[in-house]
Amino acid sequence: MKEASQISELMKQVDSYVQNCPENTMEYKAFPHKWSKKEILGHLVDSAIHNLQRFVEIQFSPSVYSVHPYRQNEWVSVNDYQHTNTQSLLQL
Image (cartoon, rainbow, N blue to C red; front, side, top):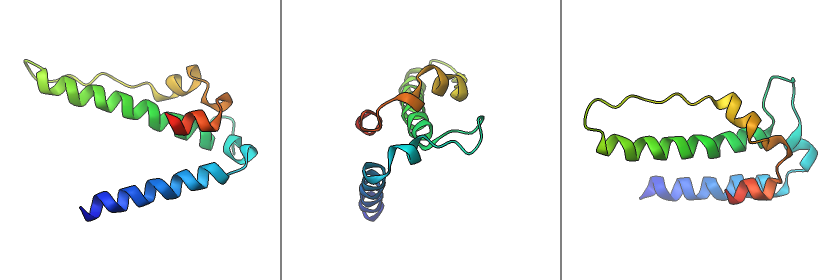
């Protein structure tokens, strides 16, 4: 249970950091092709959704499971995390 406690503490720290991070810092992009902190947070949401689907599908796959590609750059772009409210991203 030590690991669960550590993960819980880390999640609290991340939440506190994001809650107190200025919006311009969350939206800052070092280069146009790099993700901002908001986009990274959105990517983590997308990735979690994809992984959950994979974990469930693998359990019921009648044969060798074929991993469906996750086009992360396209997902981050189409979900427009750069212009999403930071609090909404945290709630996701």
